[in-house]
Image (cartoon, rainbow, N blue to C red; front, side, top):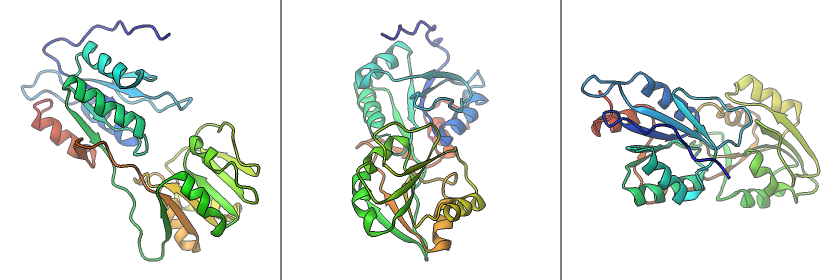
Length: 269
């Protein structure tokens, strides 16, 4: 059992913001808030970033950091109350649907304002050969008709959806080694973005890739693979992201989040 958190609660004259993080945008938001002041010039927010702990050596953001789950929506609600959290920013990965759902439920239970930070998804441009699907299972069902050598960039936890596909050779890229079940023919590239266009061209050519699978994560860090695939005329299977929980306001960028926080009187403009 995880021991209780015994850190002192936030002083009454200082507001507390929780960032549900793990993304580039979450780190950028924590860095921006580290030097922000309150509207009246007093020291700004106490900022705590929460990381899921799924990556062995995560990039740590500025400010306080906690690693590990909360124990579902009820556990998160208890934490928000105990730590006197004034606002939550859900800056998790666009595909972290369970965590986003828990955040929405906990915010509703406690009355703590919740804002989702979601980078815009990718949009196809002329020359792209994209095949949009609603899930990884749908991507796996479509693959045999598109190619035999697959660059799989859906994250290590998504590789299991392709484990049953015989006759295809997969090159999977992830930060940490994946765990079974895995496809029989699999090469693993341990790497972390951001990736360059020249690097992505090299990966596609050296591994003789003829189809790419990606989640619609959005952002610039992993977008070069889409340009490289377009240059080579390769089909790309794009898994659509889940929608944010109903009723949760969404900001598309860190500056937009800062503006919303200023409107709440949490930071100066």
